[in-house]
Length: 152
Image (cartoon, rainbow, N blue to C red):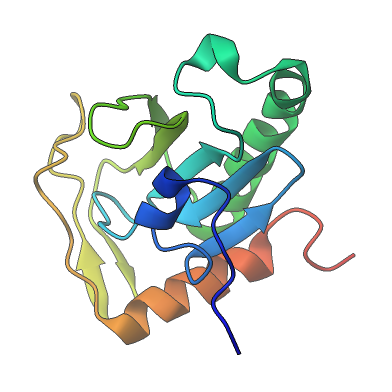
């Protein structure tokens, strides 16, 4: 079986298709390989745009629904307290956001403790909570099971 091709190189950088949580016509939601906080995600546009203004009307129209699903899914999975969307695009060129659920106190999942080192200020992107391959798989499964529409 061959590996599914990513819609663009930025999406591939974040582990697609193995890290895929949700897939829509214009956007993918991926588990962020580096877990800055428990449930850190990447929301990436499938198109070739390298500027937010260039994603097209279809992607803009779908953006709100994807954000609602992200917040519902992460809320169901981990009951975050705040959420940050960071559009950095300094290394990976295509339109994407780092989605970081925020927590005032450490959270536990799959035998690991996840700290939010930057709380209550900006997230510290260099402070990564290490996860094993098995814990990463458990995070993906946990999120997929709680994603809006997963049981429909």
